[in-house]
Length: 306
Length: 281
Image: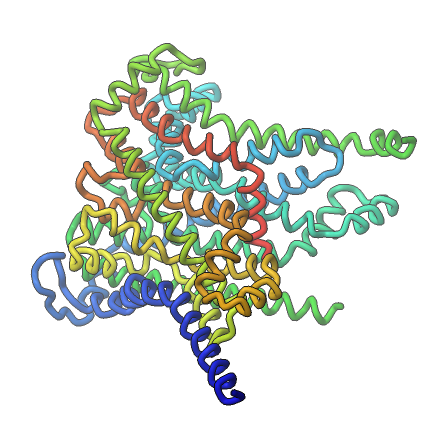
């Protein structure tokens, strides 16, 4: 009797283990096929010549040689960073300000404001790029050029000139993401104790001081998180330049992902596209490592203080 | 009461600042929507004039008719709806199943597997784009919705999210009681856990649905045939037409955006709450 009970328990744990493995296996199987294998295969492909149809032929380091001697590739890296910076840095500052305003005790219609400010995030990037494509139209009837005409400036050829292209695309990034990050910052701010602000008010601190001395330091982990996700996100910019610039993807606005997409799916040179993907991978890994090191550093110094 | 009055007088600068930021932010948020609507109701000729129109015109229906002449708008919307719904349902099922295993079932290597899932969240999806395309062609899934649906079921964030929810929201005692009653692990999941985590389904479901609905790069790569275009890919085709008719393009964009705004306003609070929870966790 005892024996069978023990045996039953054994099969019970065994059954549970098997069930657990079964339950988590779909993720790992799918990820192996559509995530891990493609990543490894990217490295392999970057050493081959392949047009998408014919058999691949070994190409040594020529794909890398090709992209590193292509000025447009350098432009794409530079553009990605410039647009990323232009779109992200002001966005983080503005979203902290809006979150701070939303978190203020005095306001009415808090939910309405929150909803309105969040609304751009649910719009698809394609729609955003199409709308802003008309706002930043090259002709005098485009909204931006029309406004400029009041100041006797322009019309600017937004989709063709070096800085205007970047400004226009960065504006699209800014507009779509500022509300999202506001919500993230707001959630962080709401977890900060109200008593801190009360105490500061009693001591006569101005809002500027409250923001600088209470909100920002307490918000540091969230700021790190947002900086991290925005950096990685802006390295993947693709839709905005493609829609705004069209298939031609002018050198002034092409990004790394757009570059590799065009190599693969317009020029049918999948080898150089893979090489570009590898370079992007290295850039992302490096930035992630820097980011982690920085947040560790900040975390440690904070612990020392406390 | 008196303290409030003192506070109001003292912080009027603050109040001004707060409303200035919020009203400004709301206007900046709304303007492009309004602009899109105005242009969707205007003829190309009106849009191309200086000064451009800033008030709605009368050609909303006419512009949309032009859209349907150029692209199969409702077909594309149907495709988007089908793909987004399938991925959402599949993701909810697989993520909650895995989340249940991680939250309630004891098994060897649990921690390692969970960390592995978290690590996959750090990898940007574009890196494997070309080999993924290769796999899809090898499987014969080009121009097939399976190309979107099957890889779309990979959702590390969803598993993480479900694990957190089930760990907190489903008491051990209930699982144990069901086990003593002789329920299999799947029966426990299906009959006990699932009914208890419906709110989590709603929140994760909205996030996933919106992601799939708005996704562009991957559908652009694998759905070449206009008959299988999703809304985003179809919009791009509309925008790429040789003859730029802005009224028509804006009309297509407008009608593609409206359903999502509708869904969003319906689930607004749930949605914002879940996004911020996901980030703060």
